[in-house]
Length: 136
Image (cartoon, rainbow, N blue to C red; front, side, top):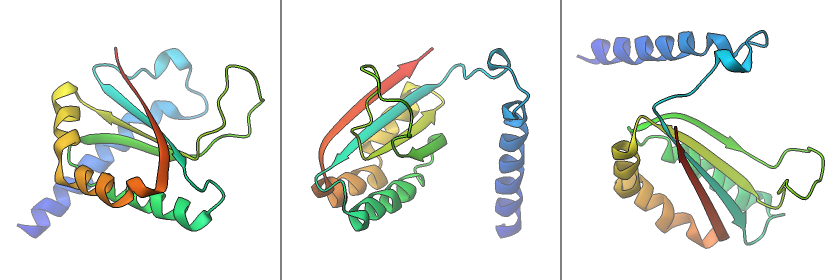
């Protein structure tokens, strides 16, 4: 049974990677489209943005959050060193972007014990959170 689960996980990972092949540097934007998905993008402003220990704690907790089974893809990031313009907000500390297959999966994520534990154990780290959810 353990070997079967291992095989299924490896096969799923391989298929996922195969689906990402168009993301090579030669792919055109029109060739890589995300469809029929819900994208959940969360921005965190830490109470102490220069406290690297707290930032590392949040990132570690976000990586634990990825154990929620309905999450399909993810990205944890930080403000880029891009040009300062009126429309660019570099003020956040950490961003967390996850993709779900649909609204039902995102709803399940919201009440998943792993997500609830994340909020309970880490909300003392931030003073502001902004969420952008989008669908096609």
